[in-house]
Amino acid sequence: MDRASIRQLILDDPSLVLADGDVMRALIATQDNSDGRVVDLRGVLLERLEGRLGALETTHRNVIAAAYDNLSGTQQVQRAVLAILDPTDFAGFLEAMVRDVSDILAVDSVRLALELTEDEWRMAQAPGIVALPIHGIARYIGEHPDRETGRITLRPTGPHAAAVFEEETLRIRSEALMHLDIGEGRRQAMLVFGSTEADRFAPDQGTDLLEFFTGCFERAVRRWLA
Image 1 (cartoon, rainbow, N blue to C red):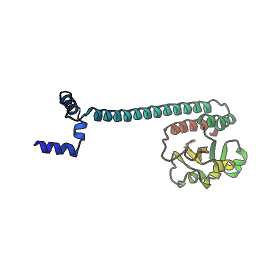
Image 2: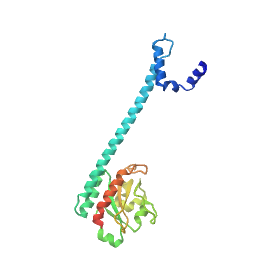
Image 3: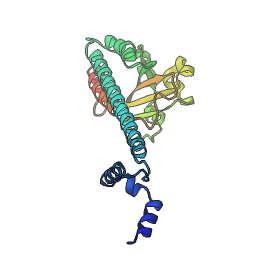
Image 4: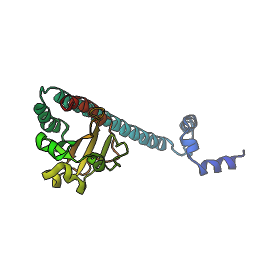
């Protein structure tokens, strides 16, 4: 390849030189021994290195922030699990669910939805429990009653929310629905978190911690609904 071709190649794609450490070092060494006719490449190299360092620092901060948020969230969920394991009766369990879990996880409303007949509901009314008709949980989540419902659903609330949040409906703007397995042959159950923040629960968010809490909660609630 002749000089003109090499020159044109570099002009067409300067990164061939700027991204090559050996070439840059050779050019800078040539400048140190030159008579001043070689363009100063140190500034270009420094700017490029500063840009890369800035990008690395930003990535580092984002990774640290994500790790901290994940650790903080894990600790909150662990505390919430301990709160629901402490009670020795069903009334205490519901109180821990409505008060302690809500405070620890910073959600504005917590509800346990059960599929109950009207007679069953008249006999089992309790704070924190809402009654839905048979197959009502699948319909609330948005699945057909004959199909398996999703484990975790995060979404904004809509007109349907009145069935769960009742008098709180107007202030609740997003919800987390956790489908519970409370035992073979038993009706459907669902734990629901409600937030006044529209973006608190969104479909694109991760659900790993909620999956873990749901598994612990359903095992705890089985003791009282068996």
